[in-house]
Image (tube, rainbow, N blue to C red; front, side, top):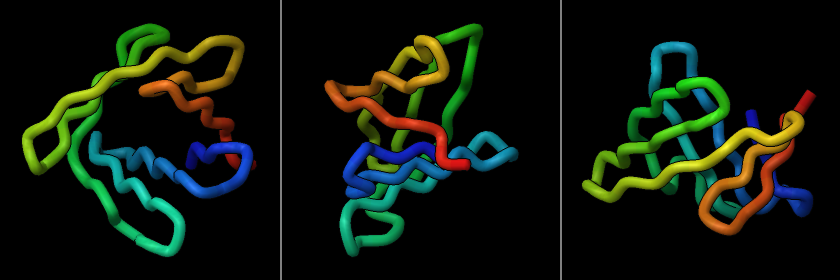
Length: 71
């Protein structure tokens, strides 16, 4: 699980290559598949849009957001 500092956005990267993104009170706001290669992650949302991000020093930088691994 990766979350923004305020907890508003939450990315659950599932072991089967799927993700489930929650935003605020809206659970499963976005869903799709993801693939990680090295420190890069690509997202393909079920609605058709794509996005990507980079892991830098254990932090996920994605679409202008910074997400931290929830422990």
